[in-house]
Image 1 (cartoon, rainbow, N blue to C red):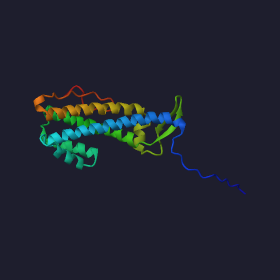
Image 2: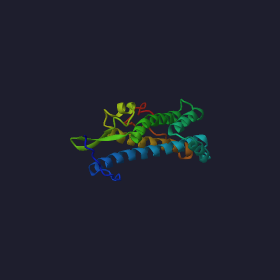
Image 3: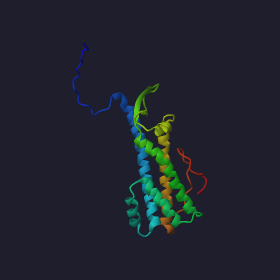
Image 4: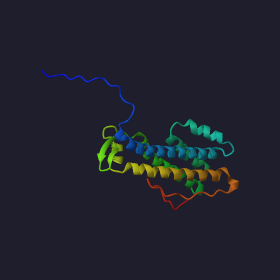
Length: 200
């Protein structure tokens, strides 16, 4: 007859295991900074959209922008508006279109950072986190399992910061024409490839 073992019930603990805390802090800091930068960039796109709708009444454009429920939908609306507000041959159109293309590519990295499940592993440096082979879709595992994803997420954070500043400068060029704000030069992004960094 097989002997039955009885284990006492335990309330799940709120704190993570102490051996995980340092790597979790590093991971959380990286993800948090990336999401902060992405949200800040999206806010600058909202400003740009509003000034393209009506530079004398920004609230009208913002009301339309916030009625669109997804970030990607908002960027699509901006791209559609550009087609009727600026000729494709103008530097303004090229500048805003490049920024929209950049944020569309960065969105995949941001989404992976926000939604990727991780699992702890042990390497020569101690505890580290890898994409959970069970808790992620195959497509995400293919993208992130063979890369230093924390390095990529840090690069993407810096790219978002550059795109945000770039879009802000385009907004100022439109919103304050008497101040003669110059259109910015394209930055060279590190985590994605979006056209040339030498063109305006």
